[in-house]
Length: 180
Ligand code: HEM
Image 1 (tube, helix red, strand yellow):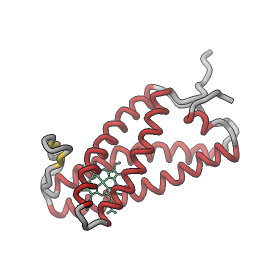
Image 2: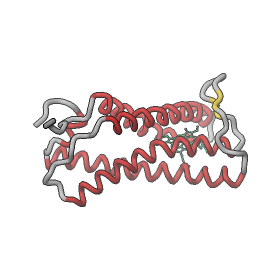
Image 3: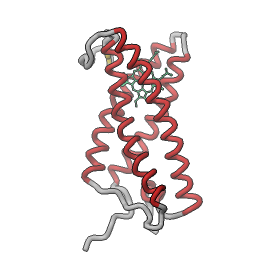
Image 4: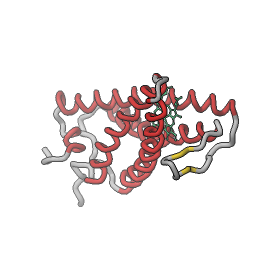
C-alpha cells in the first residue's frame, strides 16, 4: 500500500509561491492603474498585460501539475464543513486565475484595442469588437478581481489558522520542510 503524500510536490510549491507574488502584485497594479491619470497609467498597463498573460500560462501549467499529483489529504479530524470550504475555495482560485486574464484579454479585444505584450508581440483578438460587450467585460474584470482578493484573504486566514492555531501540518505541506 502506498502512503499518502505529506507535502505538495516541488513544482506545485514553487508555482504556488511564485503565483501568489504575481497575483498580489497584479491586484495592486490593476487598482493603481485605474486610479492613475498621469503618464504612469500607460506604464502600469504595459506591465499589467504581459504579467496577466504570464499568470494565465502559469495557471494552465499549475492545473496540469495539480491534476497529475494528488495533494496531501487534509487532516482526518478537520470538520467536514471546513474540508468543503477548503476544496471549494481552492477550485474557485483556479477558476479565477484562468478567468480573470481571459476576461481582461477578451475585454481589450471587444474594445478593438490591440493586445500588445511588447513593442512587436501582438496577441490575436479573442472577442468580436462590440462596445456593449467591452463595457460588460470591463465590469466583469473588476468584479472578478475583487472576488479574487476576497478569496485570497480567506485563503490567507485559513493558512494562518492551520499554521498558528491548529498546527496540523497543512501550512507546512506547502512551505516544505520535514513532515510532522
Ligand atoms: C490574474 C490576472 C489579472 C488580475 C488579477 C487583474 C486585475 C485587475 C484589476 C484589479 C484591475 C482594476 C479594476 C478596477 O478597479 O476597475 C484591472 C484592470 C484592467 N486590466 Fe486586469 N488583471 C489581470 C489580467 C489582465 C489581462 C491578461 C489583461 C489584458 C490582456 C488585463 C487588462 C486590464 C485592463 C485593460 C484594465 C483596465 C485599465 C483601465 O481602465 O485603465 N488584465 N485588472
